[in-house]
Image 1 (cartoon, rainbow, N blue to C red):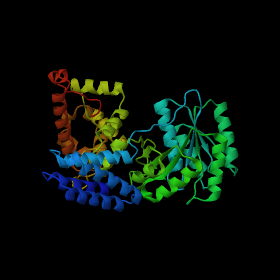
Image 2 (image 1 turned 90 degrees about the vertical axis):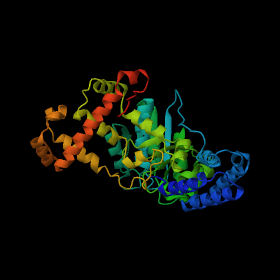
Image 3 (image 1 turned 180 degrees about the horizontal axis):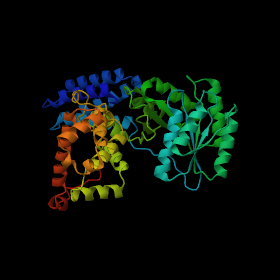
Image 4 (image 1 turned 30 degrees about the vertical axis):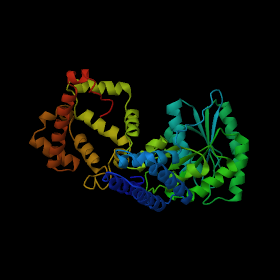
Amino acid sequence: MIFEGLNEKFQNIFSQLKRKGKLNEKDIQAASREIKLALLEADVNFKVVKQFTKNISERAIGQEVMNSLTPGQQFIKIVNDEMTTLLGGEIERMDFIDGRRNVYMMVGLQGAGKTTTAGKVANLLRKEKKFKPLLVACDVYRPAAIKQLEILGEELNIDVYSEHDIKDPVGIAKRGLKKAEDGHYDLVIFDTAGRLQIDEALMEELVKIKETILPTEILLTVDAMTGQESVNVANEFNRLLDITGVILTKLDGDTRGGAALSITFTTGKSIKYIGTGEKLADIELFYPDRMASRILGMGDVLSFIDKAQSMMDEESSRKLEEKIRNQEFDLNDFLEQIKQIESMGSMNSLLEMIPGASKKALKNVDLSGADTKRTEAIILSMTGEERHKPGIINASRRKRIASGSGTKVADVNRLLKGFEQSRKMMKQMSNPNLAKKGRMKLPFM
């Protein structure tokens, strides 16, 4: 889970405060000191930590907490508010200009996931804004960089402009822009070169590309696992290019929090998107308040709902609800729902959106997806009739299904029992009396 260590430390601090009926200045100073240590261990920039804890202490020692009937909860609210402010406060969306071509320039160091992110952004905005995107390959130095972008374009069915064996990124950018104009593309994303570290030659090249294409957005791609070192990188790119926003990648990895909690404060530029996995759909709009809630262990139910709703359109939802009402929900539908959940991301990434969920609390739960794969294998080993009418699956059929799926009969029994329990629950949920009261809402299973 992202920010797992930081998450647990905040939870421990909060649980101690909530046990106290009243808080005095000494309690608040002790809690602020613990928060300071937790943030420093998470590799958050020292100046950021100092300002953050100062703001918390000043607000908490005032009337806001000292005279509160629930001082522990009030202190948590202050921390949450300040964390949201630290992450940018308000959501800042991309700059879309009607009637003009949207030109995005992707910049960053090697290894941050810049090329993949270019494909992810193009794919996301094509879905959301109905844009016709073009990817332009300007990284002529990294081996296979052009080929990587071409493969991404093929996989996403997005056009790519590239020139092999030509080491003139500025010229390629200029001709790529001309291609976009001639082809009436309304979104052009330039994948530029990176280095292992910032050098003068790289920055000069990027400045020339910027002057050539006049981008509407310059997006810095930052590896979230790099900690506060990312601050130095962001400041340098911002000084020379005046970036318009940041995209944090690899938030599904062992992220301590340094980059996410330091960049906006030190550069004054907002985080616009976050990469949450390796799949090309694993990119999300950045919501400071939701991220603050996740870091503090309060979950992120709104993002969970957004993910769920994006996986199922209105027509599919209506058909599913109709099947449940008519008690026609079978194992084919059950399998389809499993695939829908799988497409939302890893179980780890979903659980961290649920308030109170942590690896400690879920230490006996299989988060690897092995149970899901086993369930899929069992259902796919059934005949069409068995999936539609699970009631006909007798002992000999169960033995055959277990053998065909490489599982045990006990696994098949467990699945069928769970499915029957689900059907009973759905039957109760689809009760007309409950539906009239507005208690039946099934946009996602």
